[in-house]
Image 1 (cartoon, helix red, strand yellow):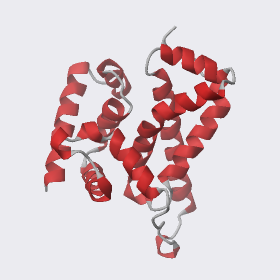
Image 2 (cartoon, rainbow, N blue to C red; image 1 turned 120 degrees about the vertical axis):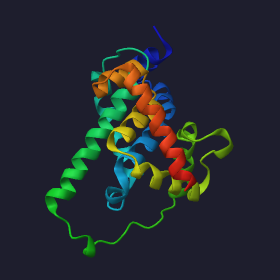
Image 3 (tube, one colour; image 1 turned 90 degrees about the horizontal axis):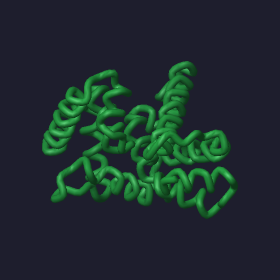
Image 4 (cartoon, rainbow, N blue to C red; image 1 turned 90 degrees about the vertical axis):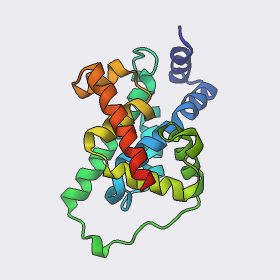
Length: 198
């Protein structure tokens, strides 16, 4: 039994230490995924930290029903739940046809700095080592650049770099060959670096 499988089994059985360790190991990736996947418009209406916490709360409730399917399976399951939550919130805001002129933008909260550091830590592998994403300005530049990528470029980066999926799984999820997803990832990361330079 692998360490991930053991941790999931113990957490599902009610071991609080294992549960906390399991979610702590994946929290930075979850926060980064939610924050980048939200996009600027939805992020102006929803707190990414609140959505990430909601995903964790719901995942805890469903943990006993989680089926372990190999290394990385728990993270993929968690991020798929985040993806579904984001889609639900997007449908809510589109269906409700909220008037943005009547909304008050979310201001910086006490958790913003901690969240920015956690997201930056999870995204360090998107930039060169000499340009580690650090601080609010760098994170804002990264988010702006990420938003300018195509949907497929954003998706391949999220799946491979944030979710940590192997290339074979990314290819399967995107309906492409491994070679095509590797090429797409390479172009996406290069474009992201170029956009951050501008």
